Image (cartoon, rainbow, N blue to C red; front, top):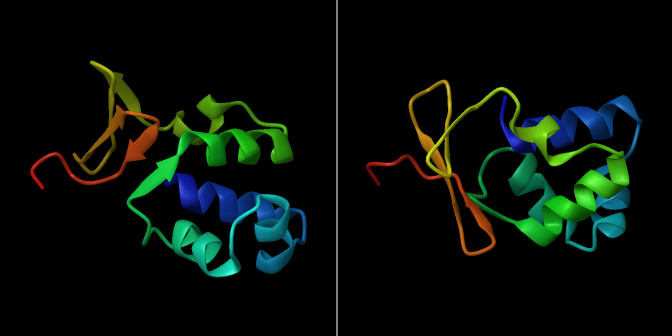
Length: 95
């Protein structure tokens, strides 16, 4: 399950609108939509910190379905999420 999907699931469980959550997280509604739908390939750590604080979840909640290896997270589909310079890179390793 992707980070964006987990954010969407938490938002929907709490009956929050995208505009409301986007405002609380200090981003635009369109950017939140892109994150939730997997269109955003990099997610800033400061944004994730705000998400974790808002939903009272630790960062591992958003990455727990992934396997860790060498500062990267290998996802079930074989793509690698690399941690680099304050962003989460969601591009497959061969891109």
